[in-house]
Image (cartoon, rainbow, N blue to C red; front, side, top):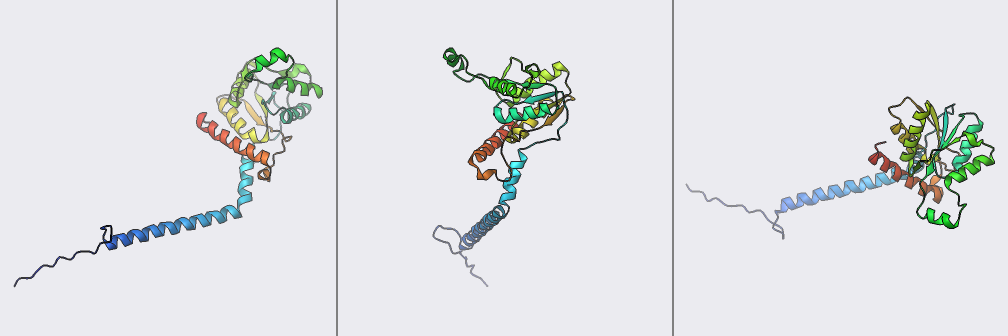
Length: 239
């Protein structure tokens, strides 16, 4: 007895796709959208609820501060002369170290042309020594080689050479609060093979506060720029 085989043809949509397959794809896409929406809402509530703790943590992370103790040398990192210089004065007056080191920054573009007409235009180092003089810090305790630096890594390398030449075993690094982690990591990297103690004592004359930095435009910009530099240093110099 012969039986006729009937061919069952699946229904197709207007694109020629089987309807069952097309429906499965729609369900999958809908599920993905639902999960994305759920994750977005959850992330929104987490960030809203924990916003202040997260922002505070971002500010605190930039600050590396150790317990003050005596060392052979106070190192003042170049830049932001007022807040850093005042912290140097405090550290020296407390007897934390007998000497102060300050590197000279590279000359800015146009400086040589400028000084042809403005003979007494002060450099950052000139301003630093002026502040030290104003607080009766003896000129003989201020040490600064003729080499010039352009960034934190240059300063760390210059200090490293100077410290090894002098046989010092410990240094105090003074910089701004927001710069202290990058500075400390950079010095640790440069001094990694030496038995030299690095003490980070950032200046509290900088009015950066981890608990409310986002309320002040100045410190918001500073934190963003510092994180950019920190990420760059971690990638470029592996600090």
